[in-house]
Length: 239
Image (cartoon, rainbow, N blue to C red; front, side, top):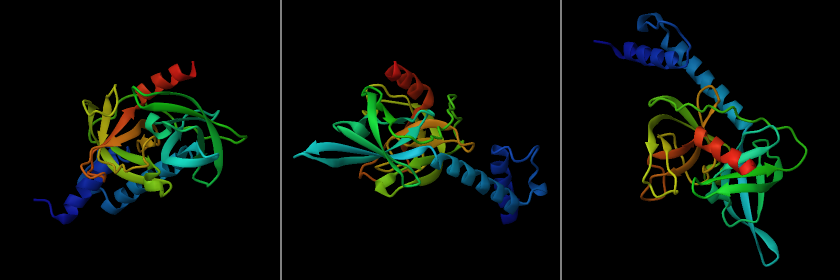
């Protein structure tokens, strides 16, 4: 049977293979520490790339002559002009919006439109700056693929968690009228709504939307709207 080193080597090799870090992997020929370092480096690179595209979304409502923040969420820059996709429930009931970049820079944003039936919304960032849109991946990731959930949970700021794809086509969850979610166990918490589900190459797979929870905390069951759906809705909102 495999000893502990053999098990580590095999696991590291399978991870390395999933990242395309080796060809025709043989467990006995791979240094598990080197494979783990390569996997770690790939995750770090994907996280750094995502940091340039994922923003915090602050929603405000005017009350007694003043703007008061009503919700913090997340969003993803998807266009070089500064288009940001987020969830409808992040902006619902608000009259003013601001996005916060990982650098700390704050910019006002305008609501271009939203679609309650899919729980998606589109913002346009105002101001003169360069944007780094996240590349889109429209094919569904296979179950078991490593993914990152990137966003602003609990207003803590830019946060990255790691998990895998658990399933596709999740529906009948009473989240939105139209439901066809990717399920993941990457930790998603309040404030992550509108953030990015990202593959290890830094491509956008979905928009993090909801969790299944009895207490409001994370149970390892999160849901993201696939990019294919989000792109169709965004195109209709732009038109």
